[in-house]
Length: 541
Ligand code: F6P
Image 1 (tube, rainbow, N blue to C red):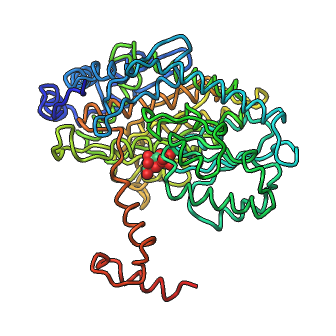
Image 2 (spheres, rainbow, N blue to C red):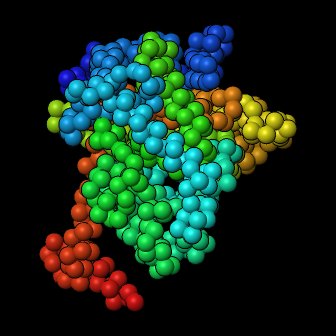
Image 3 (cartoon, helix red, strand yellow):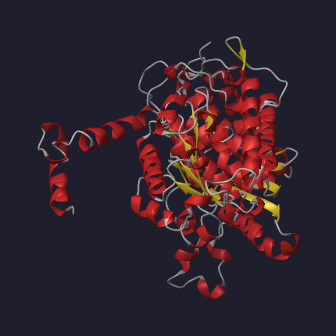
């Protein structure tokens, strides 16, 4: 059954939130802390592996209740039920949305039609496990019987960002294989990578759900040509494997049928790293660790499915985001992980959130009259403190932040040094909230020219996600949490979060201009672009 559809701004809960906002929007969180000694306890949620502290946000207990009422009135509980049970909630593509099935344990049942897809998921896992173990152990070799040393993941969007982020995030757990990622259609970059590789010991993993994505197929062809030029004509199957829903295309590219790992149409690209799309992850960190990643995600799935709305982390994060986006009219959200290993988290979340919720038509086909998807951005702490934090502290924009940190380092012996990293995160959250008044400046500074510039307004919102340690499980929990947050936002905004028609027009224009040779004509359809194209053509070698 379809998702319940209602314009959120027409609900009773929204009306009440608007009145509440008008009353409390100037609230000072510092005062709220003083008035309620239990604020941290009341506005934080603990699970086995995560402490989510949202007490530094511009909300009261009443705000939270009213936001939860909005979730209820817009049908979030019913939507969660449909999401997990395989209803075709991706209605614009007439598909179920079942990335959660990819981390569901063996023995459980999720039926699509008459088929229990959990059996397919686990059959694929057996195939992944066998392949990964053979490559890592060296039982499966290249065409000259040498062990594989390098893996090149070729994919883009969801077929790149998830595997790339997790492989980087879990680099500490890595084995001897060097895993590289090619996504952009930039031959200079690919060429420079290829010259460092030995074709005898390199495995290419071509990841494309459709197997028609131009960047991926062009890049894979480029690599295949390089491989064949090195004289390895007969043994392509030892060096090229694919992950795809389009087996036929993958085969016609030259990939042996047994080297094609499945992907299903009920998994969206940006939600797919838990499937064989994560093959490069499993190769990099080993199958056992890959399973732990899935276990972590499953743990968050259970939390999301079972916890009451006000104690439910993805729901609370989505509601906070809606509170800022739709009432405070903030346009962006920053994500700041205090771990160098999580450097690519903002890029991953940009696709997850902005491709899902960058929509302006509602589930009834009408133009929305309110804001939907935010701009997501960020970088690691502490680096970002020395780059863009000035604007967050003293600029004119209100930017809610998600801080993500770990209590303990990967290397136990580095506990003292590591404390500097994590405490910096607490210090930023604290400084953003506390601010600094004129009275708090040193006496000598109070009347000088710099005085007004050294004052910090404070009262800036942030949330903290604190994990015990960076490991496969915690990464699984974190990513599943953001997946569910994205879903809840989309449900409340009454949009379809699982299609991405917005990326098609650019692809189409590229095809028209590049493939149809209209690049050097002065077609009226290129009215806006002819001049720059002509300049380009004149100067192109
Ligand atoms: O163009 C956007 C997109 O469709 C993403 O949603 C997807 O993750 C990416 O392209 C790659 O698609 P494919 O896996 O089919 O190559």
